[in-house]
Image (tube, rainbow, N blue to C red; front, top):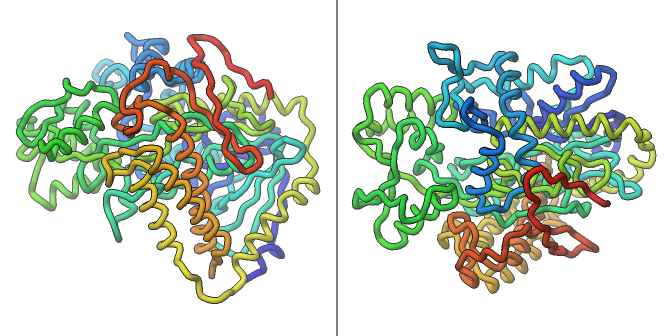
Length: 567
């Protein structure tokens, strides 16, 4: 099983896109439309037809600017929801493209619902209804329509290649067969998903992958950047989703679609006690339960039969398990309120602000490396259309930047990447039976993070002593993983996925430790500093320097102020 180095292929391209989700596909589409002479390459761990957060579909575009709304008002909404910790320039630049993205998707074949006057059907001022079960096949089909776009499916990228302080390539392996790949590129876009599976999940055992977020998004996009010293921001702004119990189906369809209110077990509406931004909603349910008034529900009893039918259809578009649960249990939403619960924490820049610290044009702090979508920090509430907008912005920037950039040397890229390929080979060499299985190591990580770093099992609470223990234990797991081998390419994939999750965990712990306040109580309560502190209105950033995490504080930028890296 050690032929992975022998079966190593070498490729040169102009634009290398790591991750074939919404942001990655739309970046490729944008670049191909702008310059048909560019060679554009997408690397995807799964298959771009059904990969990432949109794999199962979605029933709305949750970022849209209606006729009586504006991008500036959208920014105000995002500021309110994130308790001010946002990059104004990033939010404005993406929100000004929301509607253009929606129209483009419709032209590609996406069904966007319209009223009798031909206007998009909205759910409030910021989102529109779609029939989105095929949104990802539509996007991937459009990306593959261009002759200068090449897609490599089932390639797991493990590392970025840096030569002379510039990102020049990437290295990975096939998840299907014994093969490895080295890519050399003039510009590289990280468009991977965020990080799920860091914490012990709500559902154990066989159902452990029944998560809110795509379980195969393991934080690789973050981890690759962290390891080469890219600056990251706001990892401590974790996301805890309020979801339907057991199925982990979204609740926004209930709250926005039929106006369902949160109630406790006594039937009391409790929202006013905590507030209505995303963090406050999550905190309210946790607090009510901890004080003996749980479980909590969304009140659906009393909705009309037509509204119930709309709910069944909506969930079939994106979370069919919820509709099936209603059918199988006989507990229809007209007769029974829907029980809700908080999920385990995630690190995801599409909902909160966790990810790469980028400039206004989506350049990271590493030359030649760009980011878009869930891995970009500082711009919460981007959802689908925001991720696509960032993909377009990054693609335009890369095209502009490579005009004055020479093609990197393939031999230099290869020399810098070969040690990674040799590590694949080392891990595939048969050895004595392992002390731990990958499942056991993964469960160990999740147990550590749950108990010591504010998981669902401790009601999202943590303190400095617990975080120090978490750091120590995660470091120990990283050392154990150094000696883990794999019997086949699937096991090799799981080894590297765990490596990436542990990398993200370690940086996340440092961020949780660094913010000495509780700004988002629904996402986590620092019991050493349980109160909101207005003096902490700045970004907590980090980067790895000589193997250690360095914490930096960055000021908030306001309005149209454009941020550029100084390198």
